[in-house]
Amino acid sequence: MQAAANLLKSAANVAVLTGAGVSAESGIPTFRSNGGYWQKHRFEDLATPQAFARDPKFVWTWYEERRRAIAEAKPNAGHLALTELEKAMPVFTLITQNVDGLHDLAGSKNIIKLHGDIWTVRCMNCGEERVDRSRLEDLPPRCHCGGMLRPGVVWFGEMLPHGALERATAAVRAADILIVAGTSAKVYPAAGLIPLAAKVIEINPEETPFSDEVTISLRGKSAEILPQLL
Ligand code: OAD
Image (cartoon, rainbow, N blue to C red; front, side):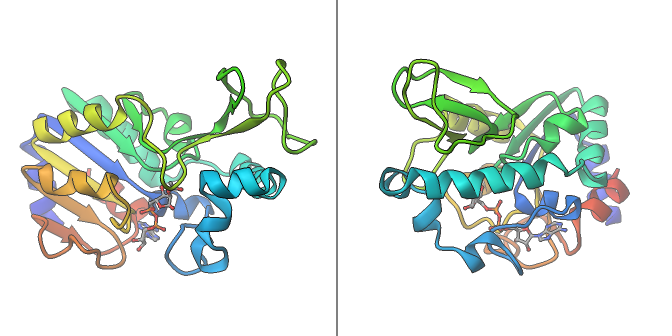
């Protein structure tokens, strides 16, 4: 921990890559660890364009359940520590795979959302995208043009939002340190950012495929380790 804190003290440009584990202490399930979504459901049934084409109501029902659960959640000490780190750093980029919006709520500013945002909806007919935090009653919801709306998230097999990976790659390459927190680092292209960094501090209660390669790997919850690190 001391070595990681010293590394961070010497940095002027920090990038952070977060995953579902960062929101675990806010009560939001992860995908692959205990109680995670992909232990109860098949992602092929819920998070692919094919699943949505087959049964949009089923997919939307799951997303709307998640939206209601996330609406009750508050940023935790890990999210807030990253907000403080951004204020303290000359250059700071937060790259997240999370779609829950808790980094925004915590006050982070320079965020790259690799997998979109569960609070946005996009029309499959006219392409309009907008924020909608309302309770969606009649599923699947419709656009004012009559087209079907879809969640503004990235599904398996889809491209990341335009320019997001390029900006994330540039930020990681330019950073003195990349902090990787709460991700299993199994989903690409996000995980492919990790080996691009000069130095990496990993924070995770469990080992990941990158734990042996990173500069420092800290075992623990991000809501505890991130505030301590700062
Ligand atoms: P995962 O569920 O794959 O991994 C969550 C990671 O968080 C695991 O490595 C856990 O050990 C760790 N973890 C659990 N509790 C934690 C805590 N309190 N503090 C810190 N870490 C903790 O989630 P992601 O890596 O985010 O994509 O998954 C990546 C992508 O796969 C998601 O964005 C989503 C998913 O399918 C799409 O839906 C496209």
